[in-house]
Image (cartoon, rainbow, N blue to C red):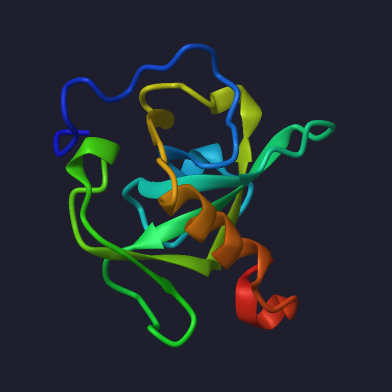
Length: 134
């Protein structure tokens, strides 16, 4: 986590809420992610009766402007590079690792109106599993 501000990585509690951003290692997810390094992910669904929460990843390299939501760098949120929120990279994050500094470190909560824009992007995605990674 060397590219993160020193203040990032702590939170009160370990329960993800919609709009919370985490630095998620692939070992903290159910899906096998090809990317070895952790991804910035935002909680898009808490799934209270399940042992995972749904996350949408942010990419800085593999974006498709036709379907991804542009995301400007926001170092205050742990988003250190220009990027894109993408429903093509949906993941199920194991709740037991939420808040763990090495597997699923809390970065920040998205402020409004950014939070609403990102959650709307997820909610309005195509429901075709071949398109959205679900």
